[in-house]
Length: 316
Ligand code: SN0
Image (tube, rainbow, N blue to C red; front, side, top):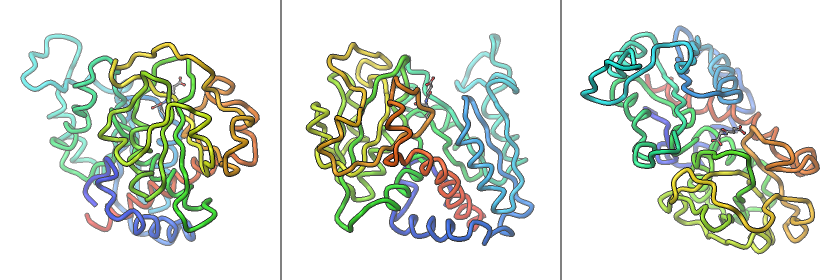
């Protein structure tokens, strides 16, 4: 594996899941594989799970890890080609990425969208600049449009909790929030859930339609109660508008998920990628219930990262 930026890089998902479950059975089985190899984790935005789980995964493989908060601890990077750098940016991605490539064997990058310029965010300028100028295997740690390590961990979690061999009904529901959030998590989850063979239903208020490229194969249902019927898994997430890019159009009705709304579900399990705003996005009662898979998802972030790192190390 040379890059892990979307489900398209994952290959056969059932094979990838098999590899993940083998790793989960014995996380230290490959403790020598990454000896003398260095993972660089570059963050342009905050992180708790991604940072710690990827670091933990690398340690399980015997790797060295270097982490840098590029947005705070380094020089401000210019991504525009041909830029006359007489303003706030101090070095160009061409230099910065080539330098990182000399120090690291595998590189991870986190770069959130700005949510102002849709073309720019959806062109993945930052991630693609690293792919172009940092000639090392590259892992997306959440980019403008996707969060593949999260989605992989989510699919592992669904696989562990499904009750039958028939495809589970997986509902992705929009939830309220106090600020505009990226579409990366829902985009990515939709892609992975469809690719895993699940029956995927996405429910959200009018105005919050996701980019169709990511929701292909899923059904859109504007009535949340209707969507939740017979659901096996309910993935709760806020996102801002894609079409009126980055906007948070006013919402009619109550979109906060409650136990009452789940009564016609198939005893649905609750999922969220975290961080979650308690009692804004999801009520305490659901986060703390036996139906919550939220901590299991976070735990599986290590397994997802370790599976990807292992495949990259085997290919160095
Ligand atoms: C990010 C998002 O893409 O939605 C990261 C999720 C893994 N979430 C946030 O930025 C939440 C910020 C907040 O203040 O609640």
